[in-house]
Length: 221
Image (cartoon, rainbow, N blue to C red):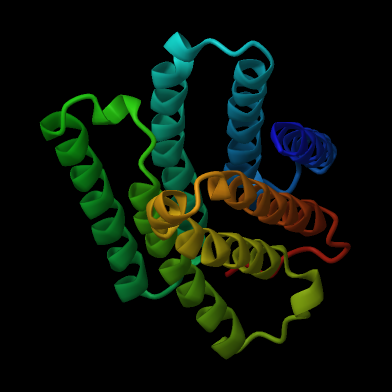
């Protein structure tokens, strides 16, 4: 099973490198710049994770979890920035400010008051992050679908990215919230959840590639 996880991670890494290459070729699409930064961060964290898998050192595991925890803050920040710059509604934009502030405060509270929690895997925290990410995705999709402009959704990079993010985090939310219970009831189930999550992440990366390859320039949202 460990080999299967590594193979899926390598597949995901290849797709992410391909997405990075495409983002460099189509770097004129400035509206997707936060996504490009997100892709770079994903590559770095995946390389670190693969390095740990091939050169296992249990003493480095807390450091790996700390890196992943930092990644979650960068992840939600970049995705929120992308969504914030595309949203028109003032209430929607203000909601994003409230959501991300609450999340950062919550993370800070957990990591400060729970001993060593910053160096531990926290699936419930990832589930909360996913929940806070999909809500503004609905905001953006709603604005696109109800806007006055006539838009070809298949060629609108903002819509494609929002749908990709919505898909991935909608799948990851139940995965992370059920992680602890399933691991307790069926040890080893975490490996299946890891593979499932990684495959869904690869689909997210593919949606980013599709967004960059859209032949028609974006309508400003």
